[in-house]
Length: 380
Image (cartoon, rainbow, N blue to C red; front, side, top):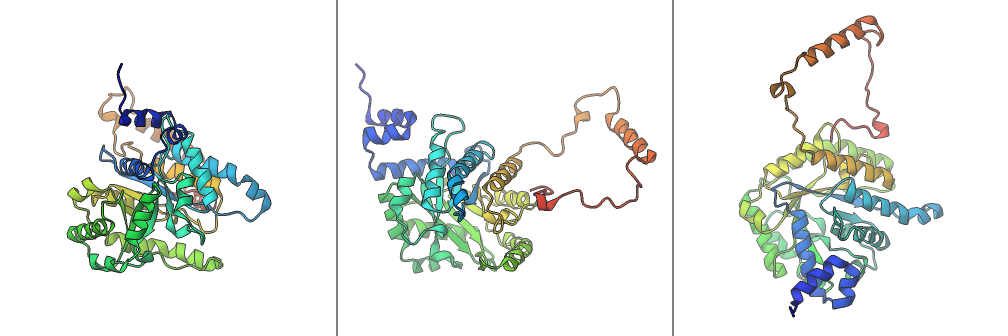
């Protein structure tokens, strides 16, 4: 009779389902942390050398009693859309612990299916006053995003010595079966090189005692906003193009040997439209990043539009477009000889319609065909 090893039983029960797995083996937190480490590294770094894309999602807490009752359904639909429609690699979630629990519960329903459940990373920026790492573990998160120096800009690896809570939080996460993912906010007015990035990541690993599951680099901290001011929100959106362009100009290059060891992610905050998101993502790939965290700033008017249906639809379209492998320069006539010149026939047809006056005056002002208020964008 063949005796199954503990490792074999581990994987068999893991395939059967998380509930059975936990009940049968009473997995220790360190083992769960190791499993989450492997899951996050595989999800945030593609073996096919493709850039991974993970959205940051803000789930607002409704104040209306009716909306409160529908919150569970809306969050469940959002979680399903991020996995099935957007085909994201992971999800960075901001919101209440209850919303996080609903999101993670829906992801677990995909266990054993394709695509499988996405690892969920909780954003520290939304941590409540009575926050407990145990609550995150119970909710089903794989880890949480920890902003070094509370989001203050870093000028060198020496600045990380000022963060006295990194080691404590890293160990606390492991003790609860989670992974801490450090976020480093870089000074935007400095020219960063590969040695600087290596020094920062090595300093983080030395301080934590081991390599983290991933490291997120953000160029420049987000400007403070007054939540009660609509005018301030609009001005932040209007100025985001210039600030993002400046930040991208200071984007550091990631050493290849470092990216092979630890998934290095970059923050993309370019507002959707006119190909801005696509250009930022392409630049990150060129500079050696393994993936991008698509921050909530990419969603136009996200501060004033908490509609989760709109959010799920946006990320489904945006990530799908950014991951598209369709060639933009494919020439059909170069591979197949056509009996008729289709482009010329189409040109003649358009010319006849224009000359007939059916479309009005050729020189008339038809205006902008895009309805931006309804969510139309000219490329992501």
